[in-house]
Amino acid sequence: METFAELKLNPLLMQSITRMQFKIPTPIQAQAIPHALIGKDILGTAQTGTGKTLCYGIACLNKLLSDKGSNALIICPTRELAVQIGEVLVGLIEHKMFIKSATLIGGESIEKQLRQLRKRPRLIIGTPGRLNDHLQRKSLRLNQTYFLVLDETDRMLDMGFTPQIEQILKYIPRRHQTLLFSATLPQNIIKIAERYLVEPVRIRVGSTTTPIQKIKQEVIRVNEGDKYNQLLNQLYERKGSILLFVKTKRNADKMVDRLRKDGHSCDCMHGNLRQSKRQRTLIAFRSEKIRILVSTELAARGLDVPSIQHVINYHLPQVPEDFIHRIGRTARAGAEGCALTFITPSDGQMWNEIQKLINPGTHQEFNNFKKFNYKKRKKFSRFKQRGNNENKPFKKSYFDRSNKNKHRRKKKFRFKKHSRRGKNRAF
Ligand SMILES: Nc1ncnc2c1ncn2[C@@H]1O[C@H](COP(=O)(O)OP(=O)(O)OP(=O)(O)O)[C@@H](O)[C@H]1O
Ligand SMILES: [Mg+2]
Image 1: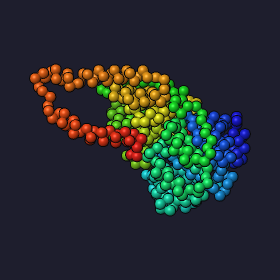
Image 2: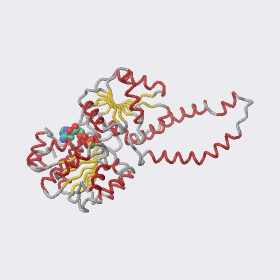
Image 3: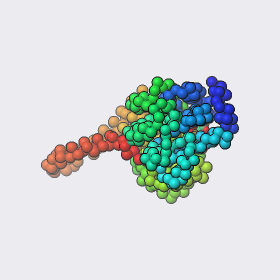
Image 4: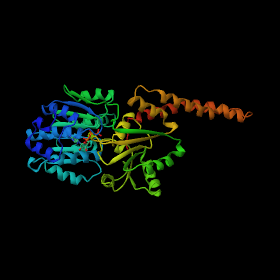
């Protein structure tokens, strides 16, 4: 399929696609839209920045135009993404289509959303928490929702969101069309996803484990102490907007303070900030009023800011797939972009996991890190200390204590293991 015209879409929708100047469908659009238009369930993957939003957006609006008795629901993991999807779809809705939409996200006035809902919108875009709130208040009815989209499927169906999604699904008619999209789809999530789909068409464009090729990837190995100075050097060397990822909300606040003191134009976005502030910061970043946006994982999924030229991973993500999403904030829609990652000796394990995902043949890095850690361990080992304090015997209680804490340590480790993909992945 070479043009949108070949899809035989509703004329009004075709008109707005032309108005928005989308001329040639991207591969995922060319492959998935025809199936979506005939009512098939879809499990679609395509690399970051390849037009998945428009793909389900076009199918969704065509359904709403052809079947006046049906409504649509699009669920995504973050508020900013919901707002962005809302803007893309509202951009496609012509006045004559008579389709109203509502974006239901947390952190915003519920009154405003109730007013929107009273107008009986047929297109709902939202995040799971607020959607459930409205369902419990009975202000949202989904009994005519025949078109469902879960964007960023793997994030939506990982341990954190599944219970909320299940809750929402209880309100949706049994026979509905479901479209699932993401750039990454781990094997365990595919299994969960299949539970929600009926005879799905699997559409795969490009790899789910390699970042898009247009991204120029660079790595800098540093010691923790040199990291910030190296970052400053990189910020001076580079031109254009930069998205800088850090691990925690506190790291983000601290980083902004430090960068501002060093004269950089920057701001941060994370889950502890008020929604209005988050939205203001994103608008300022989009319009290039601020050059550097410091963020936690919050900005890793789905955000489409064409001006981002560099993504810098100051800290590594906690899940390997997030690396692909993070660096996919640049080089979108065929553009070029750079991704720079800082690695310190303590990042060895996660960096190897990321390498295993995006570059399954390489094991070299792993060995280097092992050697590095081994040397470090040797340097600080108790034997060395003992050598220096030859006459001092080991404290008897050292062993006792370590045995006592064994159980405790195990417990701590177990929590850590779960928390990587777990419930409380608040960013
Ligand atoms: N057919 C098209 N022609 C030209 N540009 C397009 C087309 N479809 C989408 N785009 C543009 O491509 C950019 C990326 O689209 P989108 O955000 O949908 O990517 P995505 O595949 O959802 O990425 P991610 O996996 O990061 O969410 C947007 O700026 C959009 O306007
Ligand atoms: Mg997307």
